[in-house]
Length: 408
Image: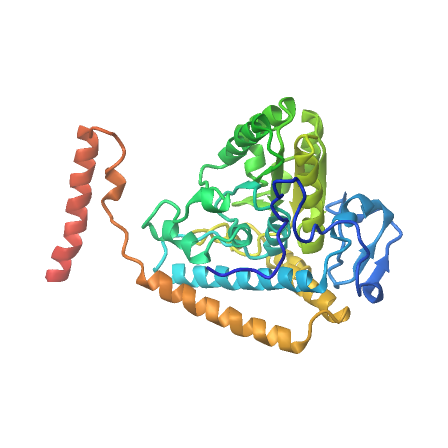
C-alpha cells in the first residue's frame, strides 16, 4: 500500500490528548516572501465570495476575513506542503492511468477526478484516523488520503468485485453509485457517533448534481435537527453530467445550509491549502458538538463525467481553458518554488515515483481476472425467479452467438 508524506490529523489518545502535529494556530514558516494582501473581503467565484489562501499564481493570500479558517493551517510545515503536492501529483497520475486502461478495454467505466485534486486531497488530509468518510464514486484522492491502495479502487470498475476494500479498516466506506444516498448514510452514522459519546466526526462527499436529490435535503434536515457531527462536502465541478450549475440552482449551493439552520461556506476548490483549512474548521466544530456544516468546494471537472460521456457536446473548450489556468497542482508548485520549499531534486524524485505508480497500476489491473458475465443474475432473488432464469438463458444464447460467429 502506498503511503503519503502529508500528515493526517492524529487519533486522540486514551487521555484525550492528540498525538503528533495538530496543524493549528502557529506562525507560517517561510511564506512571507510570497504573501499578497488583498483589498477585498474575499476572492470572487461566480459573483460570490469564497475562501482562498493561495491565488492561481501561487501567492499566499493574507486577509483578516480568512482568519477563522487560516488559523487551521498557520503552522503547516514545508514537509506537509510537499506532502499535499505529492498526493495531488500521484492521484492525478493514478487517475490518468485508470482512464487509459478503460480506453484499452481493461475497465468497463471510469469516473475521472481530473481538476478536483485539491478539493479531495485538502479535505481528505483534514480528517483524523477515527473520522469516518462516505464517498461517492469519484473520491479517488480521498481514498488515497485514507490509506486505501489505489489499485483496490479498480476492481469494481472492472466488474470483479463490489469495492475491494474493508470499509472499517480505513473508516472509508465503499463507493456509492446511487446519487446522494451517502449523505443519509453519513448522517445516520454521525447520529450514532454522537450517541456513543465519541469525539470523532463524519464527512460525506457529493457533487453539485447530487445536491438536487431529495436524499441530500433529508440528510441536511436530520443532521440539523439532531445536531449530528457531520460535514457535508460538495464538490461543485460546475456540471452534473451535461447539466450546468446555472440550471440546477438559483442560489450558490453553500447558502442552502442557511435554510436548515447550520453554516455553509464556499471555498476555492482548486486551492489545497484553503480546502485543508476549511475542512479542519468544519470537522473540529463537529467534534465539539456544534453540529453539521456544508462546504462547497468551487472547482471544475476537467474531463468527462465518466468515460462514457462526451463533454464536447455540452461545453466549450474556452471554458476548460479558463479553468486550466487555475490548475490546483500548478498553483501549489508555484507556491513551493517561490517559498523555496521544494527544489528540482524533489520534483524529479516525485516524477520517478509517479512513473512507478503508473506501472504498478497497469500491471495489477491486467493481472485481474475477467468479470463473470453471469454474476449479475445470481443475487437478484434469494430463492431464484422464473423471469431471471429466462433472462439468464437469453443472455447465454447471446454470448454463445459470438463463439459461433468466430467459428464460421
